[in-house]
Length: 312
Ligand code: CDV
Image (cartoon, rainbow, N blue to C red; front, side, top):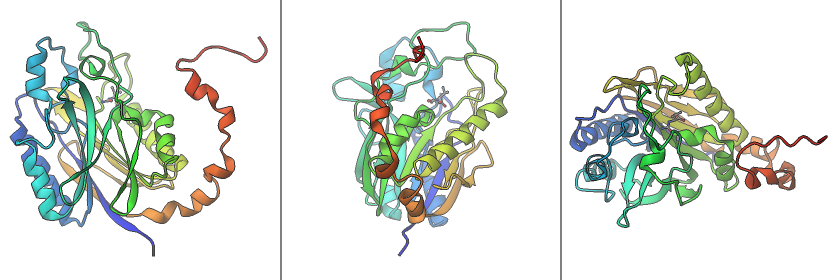
């Protein structure tokens, strides 16, 4: 019998600098209840879902940054109500947060939580975009390289709700290598939260083109890896800085099954046939039959592009 899982993407509208954890958790709980009312069994929340997207600000007092934006434990007294609600409803979720470890290390992390409220898996973001130095001339900063270390847990999948589920975070969605490593471990669902500014920090770019790239990447990554892909935004004007929405549920066929319509709190939901990719995995994307890793060595041996023409 085909496996069906009703999955929701629970998009968050803006969370401003002044919004407390209690405000964020109350909104997340409301979205969780809404998703449950729509029949969802698994809810994907955004990246850094408990606070504003703080890497847009240069801040020098690290102790204050830690206190305001990082979680020293998960769940914590402030975030526990979300876990309690999920357990009460019997619903699993993915959520992103800023993690401060007992050793004082900082990561942009996401966790997979089971319907019993227990943490099943953790992922720490590998592809950190932006810069580490202050750019005072820029309209806003993107300081993920200042505030976080590169994730040290690799790209993993977990047995979860009768599926094989992997996690990624935001900028990872631009790197085919990340998806392929999950697909090589049998990923059937990839859950991903994001915060993507509508404006390009580096050069002028039409907002519609940025959304276009978001859509084509999601569709191609899902298809080429024969997985369901759930991407959930934090969107809207946070303290005046806009981020686009377009939360998505994409089928292994590469078709968009559901898409958000607003830049506010919004739940989208889809009945995902987890076995939909079976034929694709047996034919076109039968990795065992068709992949040629002996010709892919540069992928792991070389980081930046070098011009090395065969006829030099
Ligand atoms: N939070 C992110 O990783 N944002 C990046 C932006 C900076 C391009 C993204 O890939 O959406």
